[in-house]
Image (cartoon, rainbow, N blue to C red):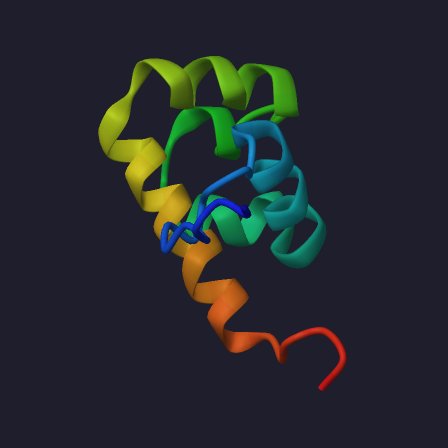
Length: 79
């Protein structure tokens, strides 16, 4: 028997993968514009951003929302 599919769009997506994909899609400057936090504005790196986002729920929520919206805008694979 197979497990039911999760309706959570972030199911199985790590914060590191999410952030890496957003940086590849938008770049640090656009992320800093959308979520103006120091770790995106000055000397940005995946490591420092992950540390900040794990400790700051409001910023993590904003970044997750950007990721969800960006995935909705993309066409589904195979279509």
